[in-house]
Each structure stands twice: as C-alpha cells, then as structure tokens.
Length: 151
Image 1 (tube, helix red, strand yellow):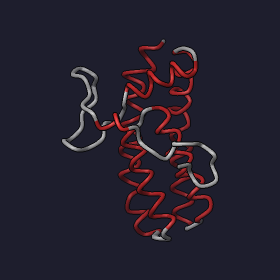
Image 2 (tube, rainbow, N blue to C red; image 1 turned 45 degrees about the horizontal axis):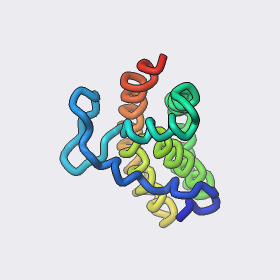
Image 3 (cartoon, rainbow, N blue to C red; image 1 turned 90 degrees about the horizontal axis):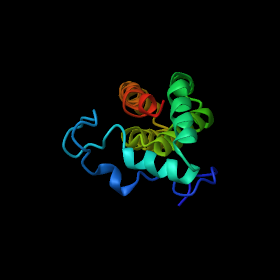
Image 4 (tube, rainbow, N blue to C red; image 1 turned 90 degrees about the vertical axis):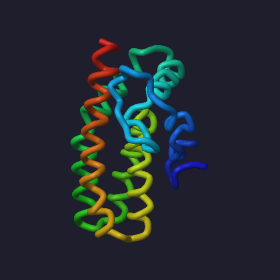
C-alpha cells in the first residue's frame, strides 16, 4: 500500500512495534493504548538503512527544524479549506513523522488526512490543536532523547 501519489511504499503505516511499550527512562510517557511520541526502534532502523547515525540524526534535526513550517502550512491550508494543499501538508507531515519514529504524530496525521479527504474541514480544524500539541512534544522528545545524544 502506498500513499496516494507519493510513491512511498508503506509510508502510510505506523510500524507494528510502534505500540509496544517503551523502555523505562526513555523519557517517553503515554497512556495505556496510546502510541508513543517517539519509537526508538524506527530511528535505529533508519540508522541501519542510511548507513549510520549521522544521516539519521540530520534527518531528525531537519524534522525538528521544519516542524513549525509544516504546521503553519497545514493550519493555513485547512483554514482556507484548500483540499489539495491541506493534503500535501498533512501527507508530508505524516510521512516524515513515520520515518523519524513519531508514531503518535503519524497516526494523528493519518486521521487528519482521512478527515480532509472527506471534506470535513471543521473536523480538521478541531484536530489541529491536538496535532500541534503532539507535534511540539514529538520535537521535544527527538531533541532530548535522540538529537542531543547523537551529537
């Protein structure tokens, strides 16, 4: 399964191990049944695929740096009810979140994508605050528990 038009195979799925418990001391807290903010196994897989921690940590750093811009694009497009741009923004955020191990963000943006595809912009606007809260928390988690450790 691939994201419509993206050509990224499997990028629309949160890894099965994303819902597993997170080791104590990881800094990740989540309620029972809720996906973790950050799945370290995804980052380890990314390191292996890219041949080391350097490129993976650069990708994580870029994700953190671009978060505000991606969020702004999403908020603006949903606010204007611009379906095409809203889908571009939410899919970009979904794919990058999944690639960096942001399991909760990947799932939230998957929900938001479905809402936008259905044309429910009021429902989309209602979800934006939750996306912002968890996006900010994901970036903080990346910075504290991955980016700084890689430096």
